[in-house]
Image (tube, rainbow, N blue to C red):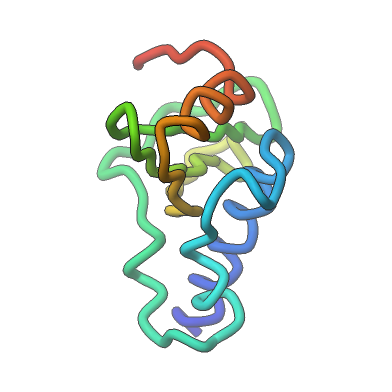
Length: 115
């Protein structure tokens, strides 16, 4: 069952990224794991070590990016059932390569903040 659950987490993360980005904006890294073509889904999913206290909302989702001026990694972070003690998951969604594409993706993601 861990493989099926991991694929589900990767699907949610990929879908979250597509709410802000177009499919052509990035090279999808997680799709072969979602489709079962690559077996070890733990390469693209993970989570936080701590479980934050409950929020007053049902869920929390965001798309993050980190990297350099010519290469970014896109990561979706989400917490399902955020109103109870539930984990925060991460899914590596894809990468963006090229000095011309990185600013466009960063503009779509909006200003960042750190926690």
